[in-house]
Length: 181
Image (cartoon, rainbow, N blue to C red; front, side, top):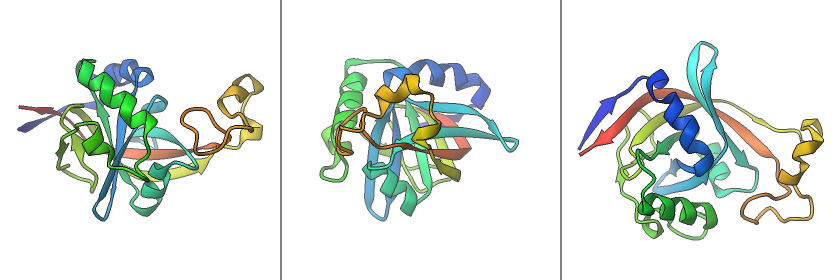
């Protein structure tokens, strides 16, 4: 297995097109690896560095992981195969707090180059990120046309829209590659 280095500007379009369909964000603390489906994110330049901003709800297990070890990988599929769609669905509807989503989704972990969170073979386009900034979104500052994303009568443990605000984690992209067989 090889990792072919890529430039962010060469893959930014692919990231933006795949993101709304669901990609994975993977974390690791001690021996616990977790991955979650994300559909929101931003790739760009901040402070003169390439960054990926991920938006994680306050009550998610991934938030606990990131607060303990502020690194993550972003894992993007090359093709939207049935296996990829199944993994996206599984990782978006189960909690790493109570189960091993890597095993449950049938994913294969690959050691990263620069951060202590693995890549995912089945989602071979990989960004390795080091958190350089995080901030909680203030719900009162979000335009009211988006209030349906934060229904205050839906508990934090609910999948999808619930009462929790997101925390924006800005990860400096310290490595980018495509895993190849």
